[in-house]
Length: 412
Image (cartoon, rainbow, N blue to C red; front, side, top):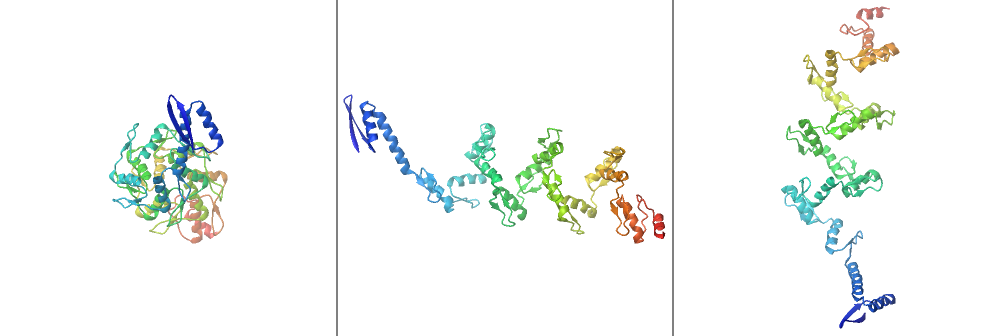
């Protein structure tokens, strides 16, 4: 420790300076000789404060994180020990910090003390408010180093980065399926539990997720907020709009690895792949018949129940499917939207057109297993098979073979 005395304006100022080396001592002499004693004192104090801050730094023995205050380190240590000393008196959920408990309790009380000055929306925590305000400012301070995409919260960035790493840290204890987010796991688990915590106030129907409920409620309000920029058609979800837009672009991003066929949606691909695997996961409880998709099962079950929910407003005739009704309505309108490119003849259905085109191509895709004869119509094949079985089939009006012709065929 060196003692330096300065005589200035009949006042004596004594500076106690830690002399670490000759260079520092020389700097102090030079500074003193020019009368800048206050600046020298200030610089020395800054060094002392830095030393004190270094001494007050608190290191986590588990992960080497550094904290300026011991209280912060103590809170952090609970992430390693798993200690959660604060419990909610309403539901028993435990927390490592008192502030987290206080925020949680607002779920029960409904208290939202923080309000947005731009739109008036209220929030339970100051953090939630700050994140929300970025929707007004457009601020997205968290950037993905892999693709440059920006996010409003570090959590959203972290979840997004899993699309690059493929990390799926959350797994279902029932079936082992893994997920990139905890919320996706929780939603998935409701498949096993059957839990549907969200109910519609209009019709009472229940849903597994809040999103599903919100989409459903649009069936009551008629709200279709997603509009196609090409044709103006409106949709209840952005996913439906995205799929629809592929009808304009022709995009089919999902392809079958077995045959190379492409599809607009992953669901269409999934259903198609069952033609290769032979899988028919949906079965009728009445007759045991199996189907590749649930819609086909639902339509089939109407053969048992006799239900025909679609009716024609022109003649009152009822039908099992909306497609059957649509085709029927063409008998009233005279519409024939399917045209043959060879003779320009029009047809009400694509199936009728396909059958007609065989008259041009000569294709006969239906074969008799008994004699090998081929036919262009399935109905013609079935009538032909009566020759081999000896049955009579007098009610088929579309058959190319009459009972009389069948008898002649048998005699020859």
